[in-house]
Structure formats: structure tokens, C-alpha cells
Image 1 (cartoon, rainbow, N blue to C red):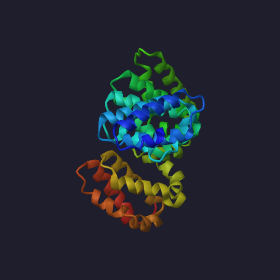
Image 2 (image 1 turned 60 degrees about the vertical axis):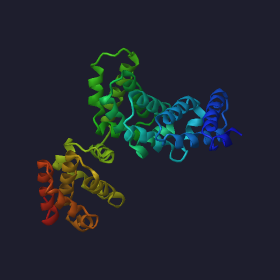
Image 3 (image 1 turned 30 degrees about the vertical axis):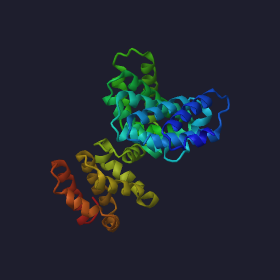
Image 4 (image 1 turned 90 degrees about the horizontal axis):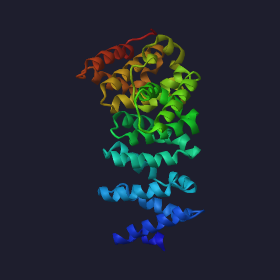
Length: 320
């Protein structure tokens, strides 16, 4: 009955039904999967509303219901549910309070090992969370972000540590540990992350860190990009899985507006082609050669410089 009420066209009825369902699910020792599925389908639609009050209500419902461990997997498998939450952080420029509420939902979800393993791989949340933490004004926003990152590192280190290393989370944690906090749990979580990153970083290969950086779409001039030793040893890794990583570089060249990302991606293409001249035809087929030529006229000097160098590798021949 309540589930049907969520589909009512009367605006008042679904809101009332959602509150009652939330109360019942939170109070039940064995919450109904069917009721949770219906409620989560409803909240997913509401999260996409242009009315901030409606979005706020939906997030409040999630904050409450997701405390029930048994329904977290149900929410994870609800179509478009995670996408709707991520969208709020990435696109909607939320207030600090809304940031806190949405990230709180992610924090609760990441106590589930399956979710901790897949969340960043599917939704690229680690760079987003770190970026929000760097710009956060409210201490509670930083606290819930660091707690979420701790869960990701603790529950699924093999899935998340490489990305954390690639975006230089260790350096950020060192900065955070030097600050004074009113909440001691922040420092505890920061120190945990530092220890985990330092321990696991020693186990990561340079290529694993490079790959994680590439997949994060946030390229910087980290050492591998300019290391002849790295490219001599690892260029074949970009050919694996039908040139998967080369295709990522191609996508970044086509879609990014960040001059640093464009410069690094252009440089990487040049470094790769010097080791594998036979790839030129493939790169031309997927539009990389044309895009490099276009970037030679880019307003940014570094982009132009690296595009020119890359073009020499694409046009010329031989191995460096």
C-alpha cells in the first residue's frame, strides 16, 4: 500500500508515504527488501529534482535508511541511484550542508566491502572527494570525507590505494596532520590513511600508479611521464586490452579543457609512439593525430610545445 502511495500523482501523498516507510524501515530488525527497493527508486527520482527542498528531503531519507546495514546492497543495485548522488557533488555545486549529507551517505555505504571495492572504479569518487576536502570550509565536511576515504582504504585497499597514491593523497594527509582540529577523530583517520598509503605505496609498481592516475583523468607532471626508464619498461602496458589506456589518453585529449592534462596527455602519446611506431595508424584512426595537430595552435604555450613534440613522433619514424 505505501509503495503504491509513492507513485501517486498527488504531491502530498508520496512525501507522507516516504516518511512512514523511512520510519518503518529504520525500526525493523529485518527491513523489507521490496519496500527498500521501492523507496530507493523514489529517492533516485527525487534527487534529480530542480527543487532543492525535494532533493534535501530525499537525501535525509537516505541518511536515515542507509544506517540499516541490510539495505545498503539494495541501494547499491538500484538503477541510477549512485549516479544521482554523485551528480549532486559533481554538477550541482551543493552547499556545505548538502555536501556533508551526501558524503555521509557514501560513508555509510562504504562499510559494505562490495561497495568499497567498486565505488571508485565505477564512479571515480576518490579524486572528487579529495578535491572537495581541499576546498572545504566546514570541518565536518572534511571529517566525513576522510572517514569515507579511510573506509575505502581499509575495506578494499587493492581497489583504491593506487588511485589515492596517484592523486597524491599522502601529501594532502601530511598537510592535514599539521593542522589543529576540534574533532580528534579527524587526526586519527588521517594518521591511519598516512600509514596505509606509506605501507601500500611500497608494494605498488610505478605502472600501477601511472594507470590509476590516467584512469582518474587528473594528469599531472608526475615522474613517470618524463622518465625514459619508465617508458622503456612499461610502454607495452598501454597496448593491453585492445589499447585501453591509449584510448583513455585519446579521450582526455578530446574532452579535457585543462592545459596541464592536455600537455601531459600529448607528451605521453609522443613517448608511446617513439617506442611503438606501428601504432601510428591506429592513433590516426581514433583521431589522436588530428587532435594533436589542432592542439599545436592551442593558446597555452605548454600545450603547444608538447603537441609539437608529439607530432614529430607521429609524423616521423623510428624509435627514440
